[in-house]
Length: 382
Image (cartoon, rainbow, N blue to C red):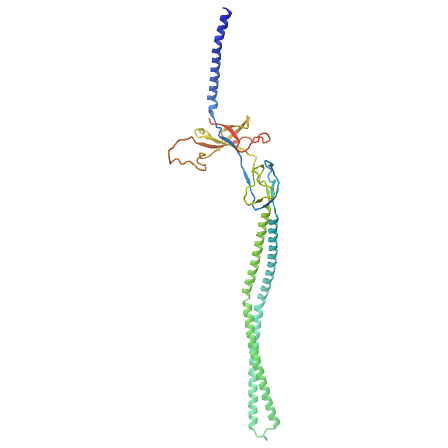
């Protein structure tokens, strides 16, 4: 066989061999897809997600100091900013002064109450004894009045008898003595009457004192009410101090947890309102929300294996697992959900959000994963 014929035969066999090799390669790839890749589903409608902690003040005021800068990493408890505390300090000082005044009023009210209790305990007994004594004096004065009246009557009777006698039967001296005795008896009777009136007036005074002593429990209740009011005022002042102390603590804002500062829109000197968003804090934890077609979720269960490729780092593959699936399509929970019962209906394949978590969080010093970055996850469903 000549060399030319051999060369032609070889050249004729090369395309056949190449076609055969390509066929074998295609068969191998097809077999691999059938055996491996058909067990996985993937989507490019997926993004990195993270918790966003909004930082806002609990009080209004002027910002004194801002301790952080944009994109700064902070630890839990780190100072973020300070609001001018002078208003809160003045409020707390005023509440403290109110508390001291209320405590002084409590001491005064308690002292008055104690004195009222002591007076009440001894007042009724003393007033009762005074009334008994006054009654006894009235009885004694009335007896003296009765005796004086009898004596005056006897003296008047003797004088009348002497006057009926002639001058020789009784001496002038005896007559004068009888008249003097009458005058003396009349004076004693008048004095006894005055004593009776004074004793009866003393009874009236004693009755008044007893009534006042018996009414003392009402005054005691008033004093007890004064103490209760003073104690309530002190309690309000303590509550005001607690509120002012809490408000003062709000002037120093710290990071509730570790994370990266983002969207900082506050500067020293700004006047901020209560609840105004000043910055956001993103904790280090990241996960993926993948919007799979509803035709892809057959066999997709929590715990299923997943692989995540991040567009920003195409050479890296991160191992992950399915955490959960939303109980409804994304369209159903949108701001304006579709109303399929009106108009013409066109069937559209819906997307179901699936949460995928990393087996290990990516190294933050090497992979800077921000919320909203694009990823391509693949989930093993068979």
